[in-house]
Image (cartoon, rainbow, N blue to C red; front, side, top):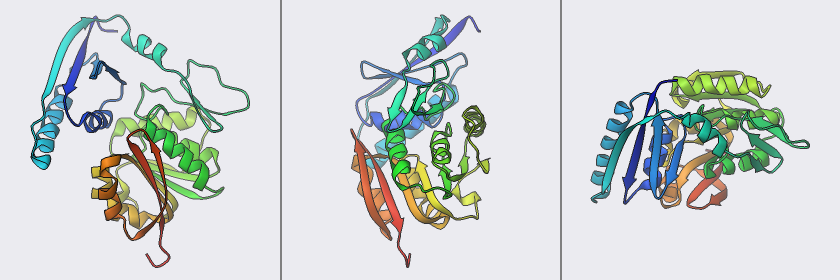
Length: 276
């Protein structure tokens, strides 16, 4: 362990959810929210991520023709094993019959136990979108379905799907997420057919169910790729409520079966039209 670590404090008066989502796609050691401030801690400097974030905020200002009061502060601090402190703050999550817990908690009898260490990658069951996707998978995945998890992160959704009897493929553009997902599948005695670095466009197969828990803008951008991969059910998440219609407009050739809402987040369950 190094003697010092970097603590980044990020404040904004607008688009906090979008900014947090942007960071979760790029930073895998956990993000703390305190007094309306997003806090990231790392033993290595995060200059590249912070520069990408500044560019993202500029793009938001241009797209929405608004001024964002945005501030990044960084401090060097003595390392007091903040990873351990963070781990102690993470509690298990129950979603229907699934008990999602970090490895330092014991399994729960009578539940389908899934071990996910949240410091490894985004997707620990604590975020609203992950919980909603788990509920959607429970309802719509049938035994022996083929499933494609696009932007798999920690692999939690693919693991849930496999526990439900699905044959799972997964992908992520981040190589760290790919390795994390593979490790988590092995940790949970779950099986996957393939997990690869890339996106939906890099697959030529079709699936009974496709799930993509990303962000609204990406779901719009890769809409055609996702449509080509799915035979039946398409689960889209990572959508802030105010962007729901923007996403639905891009998938209007699909039938909307259900919306699962939690706070400001919405998960859409769509079905491919017979003639679609």
